[in-house]
Amino acid sequence: MLTAAGIEAETSVLPGQPETALAKLVEEAQFDMLVMGAYSHSRIRSLFIGSTTTEMIRSCKVPFVLMR
Image (cartoon, rainbow, N blue to C red):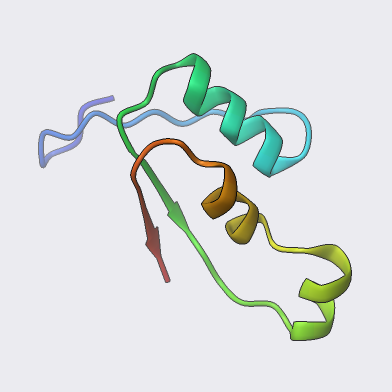
């Protein structure tokens, strides 16, 4: 899909854990950049469950933009 600004964008629904599925998709599709939204959870929730955003920062091999 081509947006009004001339940026090519793709959307899809993937099975599995978000950080694993996204990292695999980025690598297989050879994306140039990843843009994703981020929001905060409580510190207790992040401690026990973790954060998809934090894991993406650790594993992403392409430039990305986080939007809050």
